[in-house]
Length: 350
Image (tube, rainbow, N blue to C red):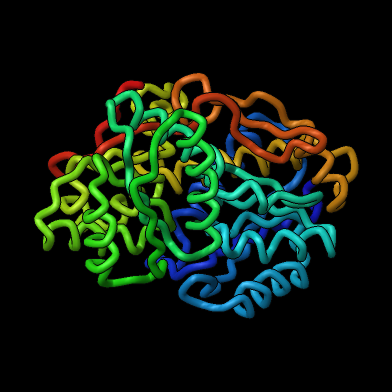
């Protein structure tokens, strides 16, 4: 049907993008094109972008306004947001208007009837991996520093459960502002409790301040962190401060699907968020191709029928898809342990 109206997909960015969101849009388009190039779409797909300044640095109002503008523009599906604070805002909005959203936050509580979740990290699962890694390294008395935010608190809650289940002792716990620039006092306080290791849990802005504080205190302690350290892809100047820290990431060196993407689009394959955006584009394309009824309800139903697609993110064998009451995209070993070393991120076998 040459005159068929295109499907409009919204891209909701919830924090400032240096390129205006161009790389993520390119990655989503590339993912959709994999389905289109196979001759499975009978119409075009167009994207429209809204840039919001959401939490923790911006406002709820900005996120709500951007979402409502995408909905009013006629979007059939929305990609975003990327921060759990804002995913919690969008989830009830999506359900209220019946507009499927695929967010790429870390929080499972961002899911809903119309809320789908591509896990670039996991507030609920990462703590269990980190606790197990500490035990494996013989570190049994960690201190925890976490953001005072929905992201940091959820990480801390889940780490508390994981460390208790494994018999680890909590030497000390401190909460810090998510946009803190100086956390020396908090770092000194937990150091004085005599821990054998340190865990950072949060969005990531404050992890830079924590690295600076450890240097100022001369405290050389094993550190593990959640996926916050993926900020290193965008901020090379932060990497040396995290030298030796182990953290969780979304991309692996052994993933053949990502290797194929690297051959086609090296810039997209190079980082976890753009790699995830490519996968999300494939999910969007699959939903449009599988929809029996090209409505918002029809696209939600079609997303729930996508099963076991090889993912470009995660370790080899990670798959993605959804189901009824199952709105988490990734299954398998989608969390990857890595370390910043000599300015490069290095995968750690586990």
